[in-house]
Image (cartoon, rainbow, N blue to C red; front, side, top):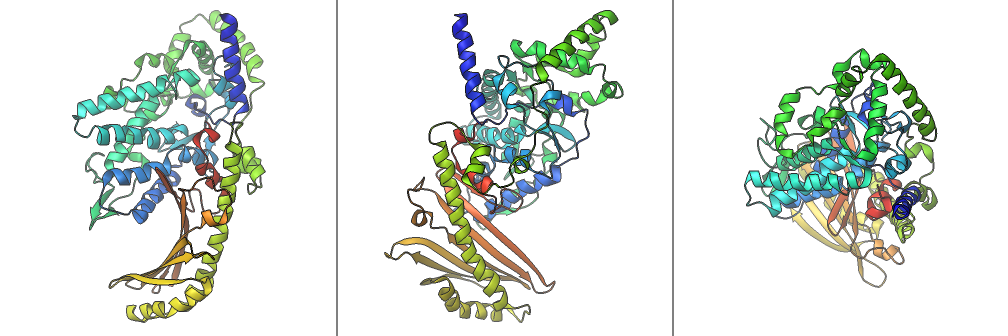
Length: 546
C-alpha cells in the first residue's frame, strides 16, 4: 500500500514537472517586508477598456446576462492573471526561496515545489496574488451565473448559500486542498467580490451609494461611471491578513518558516501591518461565506505571540534546527521570477512561443502552431486596411472642417476609390442618419465564395469626425487545415479627428468570436501586435495548464 502511494505521488510530481503549469498559490507574508508600488490605475484601465469594448461590440436587444458574458469571457480563463504576471509596469514580488513555502518538499505539494508561485502585487494598497484576478472575474462570473441566471427566482439567502457551497467546493478540490494542499479563505472573499462586480454592472447600490456602471439607453449599453478595484479590494484579499488553511503535509513547514519571521527586525519594528484594517467590519461583511476561521492560527502575530511564550533556550534550539532545514531545502529553489518577455527576446516564432506556453499533452503543439499562423494572417490583413487608412483616408478628409454636409460628401465620393484600392465591390449603404453613414461590402474569393466582409463608416459629432473600417479576417480562406470552422476574427481600425483641437486618435483592434467566448485586443491589454498574447488566448485551457 505504501509503495502504491509513493508511486502515485511520483507520477503526479513528474507530470507537473514536465508540464508548463502556472501557479495556483501565492505568498503575501514575505511580500509584506517589501514596498511595492500600487498598480491600481494600470489594472483599472485594463478592465475599463474591456467594458468599453463590450459596449462597442454589443449587438441585439438589452440583455444583462448576454453583456455579463461578454465581460466574463474576455477577462477570465486566467487572461488577466497572466497579463498582470508579465506586465513590465506592474511592480511585483515573487521569490519562492524567500517565501513561507521555501521548505516545502515535492511530496508536500508538487505544484508549489516545482512550479513556484504567482506574483504578488499591490492593488489599492493591499498586497494580493495575481491569481486573484482569475477568482474575481472567473469564479465571480460562475457565481453570477449560478445565482442570478440559474437561480434568479431564489431568495437572496438561498443565492448566497448556493454560491458559498460552490466556492468552498472549489477550494477543497480543483483550486485548493486537492491540488496544492491549501484552502484559501481570501479566494472565497475575492470570488464573492467578483460576483458583486457583475451585479453592479446594471444594478444600483450593489456598491453602496453608487450607481450601476452601465445602463440601457435606446437599447444600447452606456457607461455611467468607471470601474475601480477600490470598490472591492480590502485587506481580506491578502492571504497574510486573512490566512489560508494548510493541510497537515504543509502545516508544520509553513509554521516553521513563520516562526523565523518573528525575530526579523523589519517585523518587530511594525507588527501592526500584519493585522487587517477594519477587521471586525470585514468579519461581519463576509460572515455568510463560511470562511475557515481555524486558519486564524496562521496569522503571523498569533504565531509570534505563541513563539515568544517559549523559553529563550527553546526558541534558539528551534531556530537552529529550522535554519538547517531551510538551507537543505531552499538551495534548489529558483529566485525572483523574470517576466517571459525578458527570458526570450524573440516571441514571434512557433518555437519561441512553444518555449513559453508549451505542453506535452497530445495536440497542444498543433494548436500553438495553428494559433501562430492565425495571428500572421490577421497581421497581413491588417496591413492592407492600415494602408488605406494611413495613406488615403486622412489625406482625403484633410485638416479643415467646413460642415457636416461637406464631410459626408467627401465620404460618398471616396467610395469608388476605396473600392479600387481594396479591390472590393457589392456596395450596400446600410444606414444613413443625420450623424452617421455606414457602407457595407461582401468580399468574395476567385470562386465567387464570400470569404469576408467590410463596413466603412463615418460619424460626425460637432467638429469631431470618426472614420472606421470593420472587416472580417478570411482565416478559413488563407489557412490550410484550420483549427476551427466556427471561429471568426474581426478587425476594427478607426481614426478620430478633432478639427478644433487638431488632434488625431488611432484605434486598431481585433475581436475574436468563437462558440461561448468573445474577446478583444487593446493597446494596454494583449495588443494586436502581441502574438504571444493571441496564442495564449486561443489555445485550449489544458495546453496552458496552471
